[in-house]
Length: 262
Image (cartoon, rainbow, N blue to C red):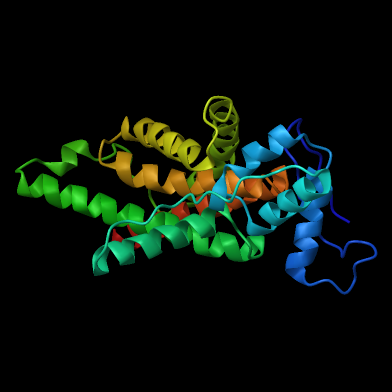
């Protein structure tokens, strides 16, 4: 049985073995039972706050909360959605489905951690590159020299830059990211909003060395922030890896691209 220590007021999912006495249960049922075991000691007021997260909270966690309220003989509200529909038409439907998939993937991870990291890396990198390219194009159309707004550093495909960008950078920045998220969660309750605020702050910080980096980097750190908060329900180690590994892979891809382009 794998069980990581929990901070006050935050349950941690216990996983790794079948729950005793329930060897024939399906995976979803075992997960629900695991959530129920973790949530049971907490007050109804706390469970209502978890309930308010809507689809940002795993469906099995909602099932566990409902079971606890029924056993306590208390009423509970329906599950509130986190992602509202966006209008009608083909484009809004495509946007809605895309945003819902991104929301489910980031805030309700169900796949193994290693598969999550492999998908999270291109999810963090692709839109970031697209955003940066659109900004550069808009600047050129406006007659602005984008080079003046680009980062001053020029990474090279060397062992020094490889260690700096792929190992040291993600390790240090993920520790800082975790501390920042802990602080933000004291004031902002919804994980989606916490991830947005974190992304803005990290984008601005990276943009100090080159404004073009602000928005693209901001998107990447939205993904890293969401990954950390979601996997924090499992353990600190899982949360750290879920944010640091995609970060490292993104930096590796950028470094290889710049190195091969020279």
